[in-house]
Length: 256
Image 1 (cartoon, rainbow, N blue to C red):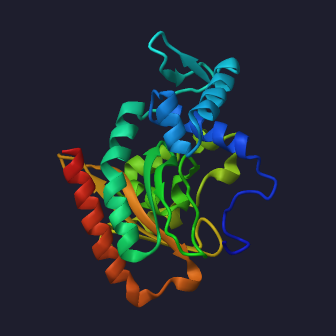
Image 2 (cartoon, rainbow, N blue to C red):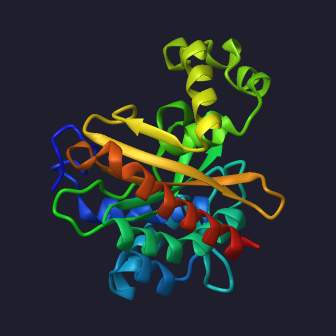
């Protein structure tokens, strides 16, 4: 259940199509899959996973090697972040994310920035009836979401300007953010060390996020907690930040 304006699956969603798309995202973002791993990931029988993967092969979304392992096919262009990096991040983050969800009772996401976009590489949903659903595999403009603001704030103002240079948006100027507002938002994130999103990306959604650092202290991802705005309370932010900090540090330790 979710509020009508929060992003949710369409009423006409076809389960097999959704499963195939999820597998395509996993192949693109995380790398090779076996039939058993695909079945476990989707929660379906091996025979179902095999049929889905074979369909992806037929349409060139996947290829199968002599080792019977499936890999991204020619239709899927690899992102700037390598599949092995994304898979490693996800593996390091899942357990701390589950602890975070158990602690706060809200959905948790892990995201990485690729240019001016953010891709959600992992989601752990809470079990509340009214909740923010999984965003795993989804891509959003970086300046609109919590993780994107966290990761953009790690860049210098000059780097942000270069990233959002006008020529990059020549064909779609409507997608270029207001840079003055964005710089003000990023200054605020740098000052407090976290990003707060109150219906910035989706109506009815509130989120808080902070960076995950690598061994050199550089941000490599963002971990965030998302909740319906009806459960957001300003006085609860300090509790959320403490739990987020513990989760981010646990992911960093796992990466190291």
